[in-house]
View 1 (cartoon, protein in one colour):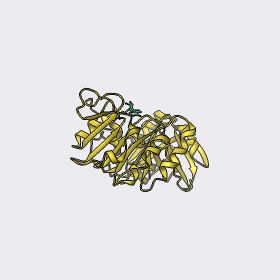
View 2 (view 1 turned 45 degrees about the horizontal axis):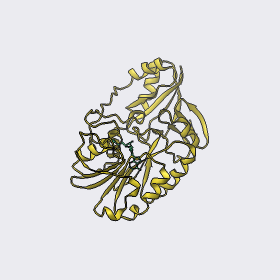
View 3 (view 1 turned 180 degrees about the horizontal axis):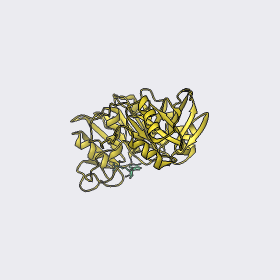
View 4 (view 1 turned 120 degrees about the vertical axis):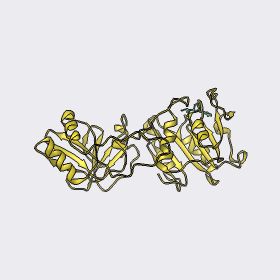
Length: 296
Ligand SMILES: C[S@@+](CC[C@H](N)C(=O)[O-])C[C@H]1O[C@@H](n2cnc3c(N)ncnc32)[C@H](O)[C@@H]1O
């Protein structure tokens, strides 16, 4: 296949969101969309297949040999003829990535992706955007924090390679029940958590029971980081952020979407200078907007 095609793997349940932002779609295989190149800037995506090609094969061994000839490590994306695909995967070099511990470095080995189109044809891409199989960032989980929301921050810090250092002053909006607070405290940061609902009793942090939108930067002159996991319209957060953006502050904010009308907000956040917008594996119908000194 002509490499002017690119493959985009949607996060589970967000296929329609990806389809609505992708232009020139030529084929769809489950969650995987092929579209004409060049590479498009899309947000509802979990992995990008940068160099897709179609290969015919005669047997399981033949398929595995053809993949091996292109690249050492492969992640299988199961869609059709799944049993046959599993047998091909068994004939490829062993690849069973271990879940990460928090703050361990990103995997460095190049990882290709492949799937079957039918019993004798595979679609593969030796180059992909994510170093994780199908973009799934797995951690060794813990039951210590009060909810699984901590995984969003773990993933963000791991991917961006940047996080608050010991003593950094953090303001956290929409903090209840306190899983992000727990992560920030584990890093040794000095956290002020804000919510209208209380924190879980096992989280011991400075807490303001307030409407987050009533806070102003002049009341927090020492803040170095602002975190937000608020449930709110992204436009409302955008308005609130304006005076804070004039300060030397790093930001990590979840944008929560409900309907198509809010997609204008993507444009607004995208245009904030020096910032990044991404869908984390642990985001649901959410994007993570950040403005930090690290790279995403
Ligand atoms: C998804 S939860 C946050 C979970 C949290 N990040 C954690 O790790 O445990 C969203 C929170 O936003 C809070 N919230 C929504 N609107 C708010 C507002 N205007 N001011 C303060 N808190 C608000 C809700 O009370 C809720 O606790």
